[in-house]
Figure 1 (tube, rainbow, N blue to C red):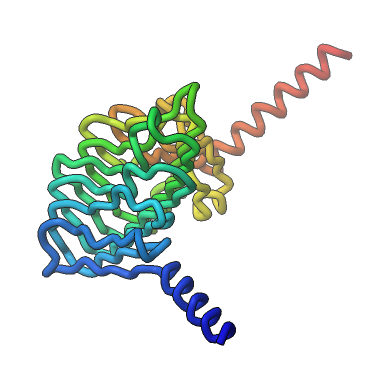
Figure 2 (cartoon, helix red, strand yellow):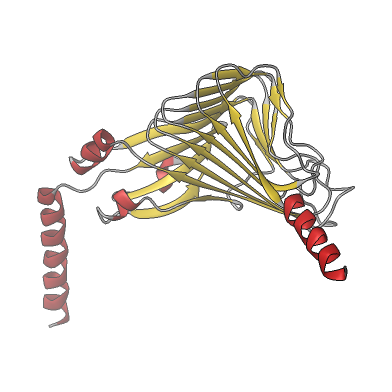
Length: 270
């Protein structure tokens, strides 16, 4: 009898920790408030068609520690209000992953994209980890992007990692010696509680293969030199900037110039 009861309790616990899988399609309208933090620790939302909704409400769902939002290639999700992914959670560690397919768009028409609570005075010890994956041609537009606040009296922390991919045409332009800039995220009012210290640009393999260096997140294009790339956080935007790759002739001349300087130094020392 005890064994049977133990089995039933174990099954109930596994159900409580299940992942919730939701879909937004062309027929989805109004408030999208289906995120269930009472019976799930993970919620995966997939946008399969162009859709326009009022909001995504992931507030006060403390058991729901993992949220993913995926928009497939070529589709757009328009939200007239806010997207809370999550918001107003009280304690613990939370992770959010937003993935945009090629030429897909996430647009909050005057709304705020939230990654975590904004009230540190009531809630402490919160960790929010956010990853945004952006395929070629994808973009995010919002009134602002906000995360949980930190101050000297609380131990909250938040980080944002942005992974971006380039189109083949952009890679070809870079190979031919051209500079490429693409705005990935556009806001009206900026980024609340995100700074150069907690935003990271992931390495781009296609650029690493060209011998380019990732300088990370900077506040000016001037911080990105030849044969480098980085994420510029300025003017309420996040812009991927890729400097030119030196053409073979230019690189050869540079090497010859360096060699000439070395010869001159040797002659002076002699």
